[in-house]
Image (cartoon, rainbow, N blue to C red):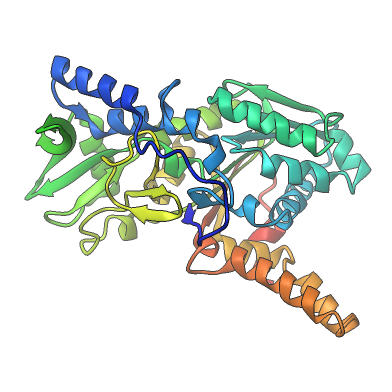
Length: 389
């Protein structure tokens, strides 16, 4: 997720934290002692009444806390739809093609994919779009987006959990980096876990023994530890997530867009403070104990572990690229080139389109999003979004 540049918008709620959530967390710590950072982050983001994703739907937009690619322009969804149509094609055009989007935000990507799919009557007839969403507030927002776009005749369903026997593609955009993470710090050959305590009226870090052996096994599987004295995030939820996805896919692909790195870069010795970031009113910070329940909290994805966990669960790693390369390969620049050559007098339109493209492929911002392609019983031929042509 990227912080947004300043924009004109209505004033935000002046309350900078969720008092009921703070009180609930404080009572839990007073009763049971310090909690893992993973449990703290899960409450801050996903508490059913007071978590960020339950109460801050209005900030998930261009005038809000951060921007994702679907907010920039519908061309992003149109190009993802182009890739999905090619998947359907190489799978021999099945009569039903499932697209299961997990964590669909306010529904803009779903809207744009379904709209773009309508340009191919056969693909549109096969497309069955399903959104897996845990937030009732976001589900309502997604339904409004679809209804406002007059797409109510499309075959689209909302689910609480992954369906079985998926034949098509499981899609996510900036989902995994919002899973709650454990935080650890290396001390010699040992790891200590960052837990959350309460002192002097504030939530603070407290180092304790690891809460789960899985945290040490995580790094044993990688074959190395973070640098001495370095803090690092461990996303065990990502591992269980890809295992569930793999079990749900009968035939097809898993297409994952997210910020992250290979493990060797994510846990490099120079990365002393990890990758945890918080977003609020277009500003990024590294303090998760401010604005609890009012700010987004993310951590970069370990794509090495995500790929390996998927492979152990039955998926094949087919390709990985970055969003810049993915969108360029799918032809994001073609309309601009055509406009420049065919209608050189339309310079205002040319520069408007060029700005959209640059926003989506800027390698310092959205362009650095990684795009991971995994599959099961699906053609291994390289898809266009993952070619260098």
